[in-house]
Length: 508
Image (cartoon, rainbow, N blue to C red; front, side, top):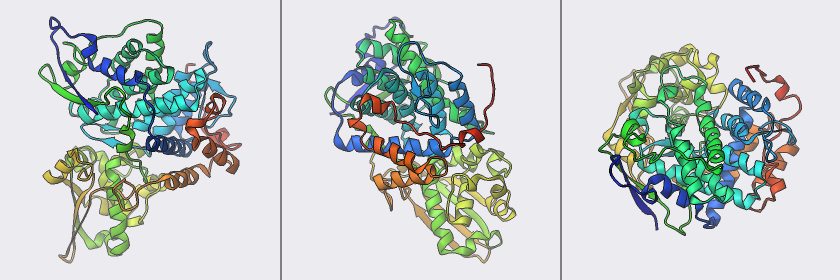
């Protein structure tokens, strides 16, 4: 049975034993040796495949190349065997924190992997790179890795259910540092005290502002979760050496809640598994069929449908206005409510277009499809008819769609909205969608064959056929893998692929 842990700010003179602190409760969950349920194992395998898919598609992109070169310019740690780097040969290792960094950027670059949205936003698949890197470094087997990944997902999703970061302009990776540290604690079988110290440092070092996702969005957007994963690895290392961290990190008078979040009078109720309870949080998350911000997933599906049914909507001459009535988040973060002129700028960066629902809806409507490269190409964004139609698309907050967005009932929770299109001839077209087609409650929920198909689609241009089969053969046997097989749980680029990627030089 899930236990709701009440969290509030404590004055320095108020007694707050460690055992009552949120970081300690997180550590207790991580240290609980409960087995992983079969359906959770199945979903973990799906997400390992999903992460490799999007990493493969991003191997030659500049941010990924830069992070990979940084990792490769560092030697393997003295203790341990090191960890693999996506794209590189199996024998090419670096230290685990740098592997977490490089692989984390590769996974996040295209914003194309899994998501969980509640009080906060998250991509819980960001837990996978740091936990796998440490597993490879210390020689963990697949069963231990599976348990660790279940913890990483559980803790991040539980924090996201209860504590809003974005409301205070704090980036959502502040929940990732503690979850990844907890997952690594499970992997290594650490005691509660050690995990508690690691969670505290991981949170302390991963709080940053949301400017990384505002205005002209930079390449740091992909690096931010990788940095949190890297910090989690380093936090665990430090805690294992007996060093302590700021505490109480959440509840302290000068802690995260009091000064970064809701202030000294704040309180939250964080749901955590009870002792002996299975960690099933991953089952409440969902992946992306399309390479775009999650709130755009359902809108892409609706736009494709409308464009196919009514091809005349693709011509801006036939349309007076398009209004997307949607949730507060969609309107203010990726919609016209953000008041970001870049969201209507055809010369904006890919990262910015990825966070512009007016752009995304327009292109999906006109093309009847969405592609992780072609849909963001400068020549696609700059097409005259696209720009004309794009500037007729606005968003509006709708109280009912906001309520459904925040609903705790999974059958009611929604990420879409209602579109109202006014045609030049005076006709109005109205349609709506609640969840993406790939969502568990959508028209075509993603299953194992969809994850495998996504991997093949994204991997075929950069991996050999044998390498595709080798990786899938390992991933689909995840809990049964030996330590030697876990050490090979990566993807190796086809000959010449990385040679054609940028290889920037820096300080190291």
